[in-house]
Image (cartoon, rainbow, N blue to C red):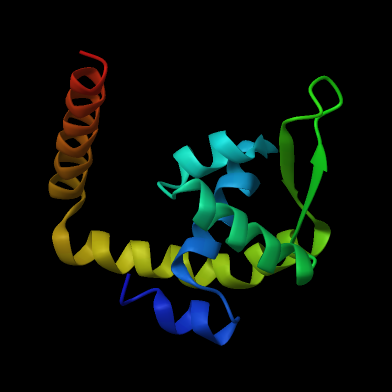
Length: 126
């Protein structure tokens, strides 16, 4: 993350806030529980992060129409604009990492990480 942080800080974003923005941008609106799991954040943390980002009008939350106990979070147009500003720098960093590490090595690493996550996920249910 050290390579990404200068750009994030320039836009007054934390690593966790960026993960939340990207998750909502890439996957659409989510309820707080799904979003917390997707971003690997605890529910108290995601609640605080959402509150801060909602104040900045990057996200909005609303009660689920079908289940008023659920809170649905979605990205706003300001959040999308911020993604458009920060995203190109992030993509450049990813390209630099790939050039330094190698495409094949990076794909192998991702594959191994996916296998590890699947294994750990399966063990959590046992």
